Length: 160
Image 1 (cartoon, rainbow, N blue to C red):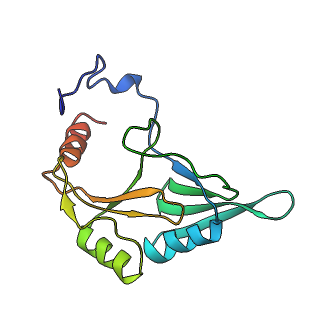
Image 2 (cartoon, rainbow, N blue to C red):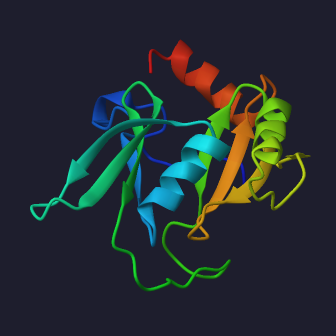
């Protein structure tokens, strides 16, 4: 049934109380290496920092779009286990309006490129990179023919 909507609440917005994705959080081994990666390689801007009671840097919020952030935590000391068969969050996806420009920017910044730009099953354009702690990051452009853009238009017509 791939691609088909299977839900008893299909199109029923009155039951939805979630309005958006506020942030994703990543615990880092070196918060400053991660801040450099997300600013210098992916072009995000630092929004603000929060400090622990002892004065050490605890959290850095990276700005993505209004109300959308990436939250970086310091203090990671143990590597997790990830893979195609492991449950839980498997990657972070960041949206772009120009996939080629995003790819070229990561390449120019010396960032890791784990794939070339390719067309996904949903008809989006994407490439993969990873941050200093190995978090898999998909960068995606959703052209009008992509399933995501089609769903956006459908929900917009329905009044969200």
